[in-house]
Amino acid sequence: MDLSLYQQHFIVTGCSSGFGKAITEILCREGASVTGVARKQDPLSRLHHQWPDRFTPIQGDLFKPETIDRLVDYVSDKPLHGLILNAGGPPAKKAAETSIKDWDEAYASVFRWKIDLVLRLLGKFRETEYGRILFIESQSVKQPIPVLALSNSMRAAVIGFTKSLSRDVGLQGITVNVLAPGSHDTPAIQRVIAYIAHQSGRPADEVRNSMEESIPVGRFGTGEELAGLAAWLLSVHSGYVTGQTISHDGGSVSGLFG
Image 1 (cartoon, rainbow, N blue to C red):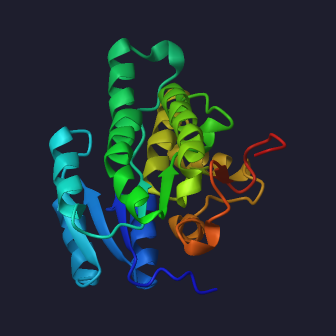
Image 2 (cartoon, rainbow, N blue to C red):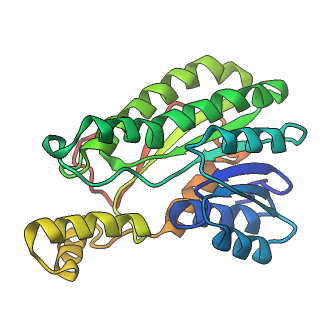
Image 3 (cartoon, rainbow, N blue to C red):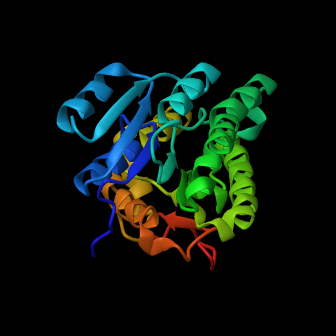
């Protein structure tokens, strides 16, 4: 299928590793241009070296308003077809282990900056009556993960925002969707494995094997697999899909609507 992404322009946050990197790479391979944001310069430089004509790096921390200012200013005079909101999650903790400081930091890292960026770029999509807004969250929004209380809660708030926004902008050719990945072989899963290993006293390899055995397909997913689904959701073919939270989890969510 031709995704018709050639010469379209996307913003990808958290583009230097994991899902963000995989999505950046598939968009560039499909002929799109990507403005990518990440905190570390070296992986940004490597992506720019790989795709010099298609990838523009912006180094900065999106939790800080000045980075959002620079990003919005950079794309102000450029066409924009889609926005992918992706970032690492808060620390692995049970609810009873958290402090109010943890919740303040989780609000800033999981929720606040995403809403700020979407609202500041929404006008560009409305001007052209076209846009694809895609949040990369977690299967925890459908089936809470016991050791991820902060993620369970703040990512659920993101879902409430996306569903509300999708109904506000549907008539303007703008779709708003969420991908809810389960366990994938990316750096993020290592935090969970390390936490469980520390708490249980089990070797990390044993924890990993046990996690994979619990997934119906018997393995972790890959960033490339998720990126393929993301690319379709970012394409012209997905115009009738909006307000949805779509699992990508190897069948891990037990509910009927997983």
